[in-house]
Length: 169
Picture 1 (cartoon, rainbow, N blue to C red):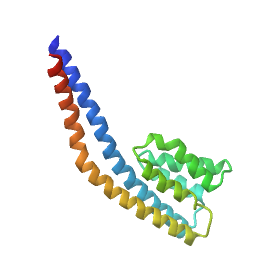
Picture 2: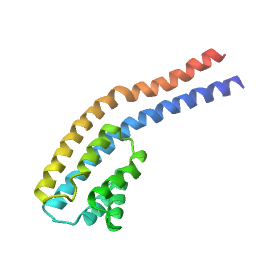
Picture 3: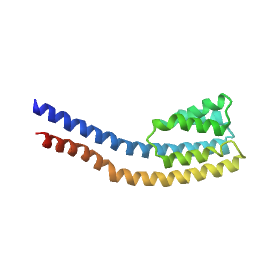
Picture 4: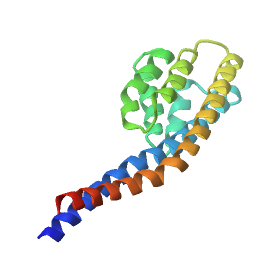
């Protein structure tokens, strides 16, 4: 009976460590997808001259993470009559909690939203490029953080479980 209890403690704490580690991995993937999405949006605005609702719909279909939901919600908000800025802010508000992104990542998206649909395509292209540059820096930081902390959290979870088992028994 003790062996079963000890195993459950180790597995439970190990699982917690793996869940925390997964957040670092997901953040890297989501930041990469955001960069790709903003490149696609820049192309749609600059060269395709695609209206924002259609561009958002096209982008959301090509993404695989929860970032796709950001563009889908923004498209839905635009279709209900919201301005581009309002739609983007609402999408961030609704989707952010479902992502592994941090507040610093959110700040970049919020600042981008202030300029969406407000100016000519050349100005929007500049704002999108600036946001991409900021996301590139955040992505590099996230990769470094992931490399440092994923193994740490995985081992920490298992070792914490072992420590608790040793204390109990």
